[in-house]
Image 1 (spheres, rainbow, N blue to C red):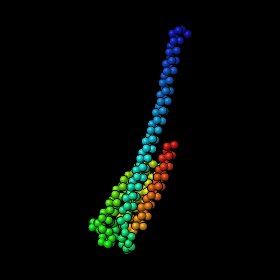
Image 2: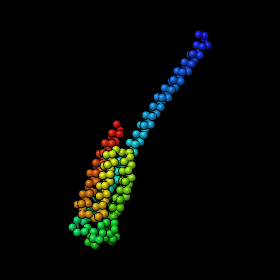
Image 3: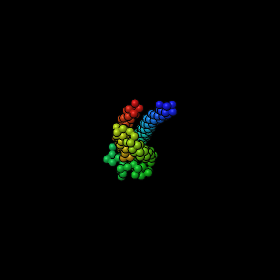
Image 4: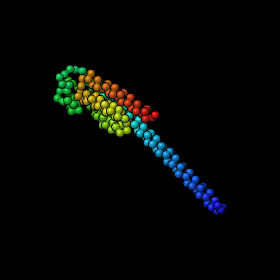
Length: 192
């Protein structure tokens, strides 16, 4: 073998080794980039799940407190009809119903009920998001919490007896705690 052929073989071998090194390096970089992107996506989902769960708990707590305060305006008189002439305080006369509640009582309860319905609309959006980014248990307990909040708002809207209304309102706390537990379990599992 002459010197020129040897040089060509060495140069060709060097070129092949360099090319192989580039291919191997690119392969490792590609795998690393894929892992990094998956990790970032998982992290974003985790952060988004946390944000939605925190918003649900915060809104449920706010509604519970508002309804609990407004329920103090309910009377405990036993009547065949809680509000003669209507089933909803929202449809009652603005001046109140004589012998049942006055204008100020009506305003306090109506404000709490309307605020409760606004939050329930927001809860619909949040539970929809959670159905996509959360676990099935999170989504189910969020729906139960929203249903309990609706029951509690409805009890004030109907000017229910205080014992019934407070029972519905306090049940929000149990539903919220069940939701928070499901959220914690999912968030901890996702972080591992």
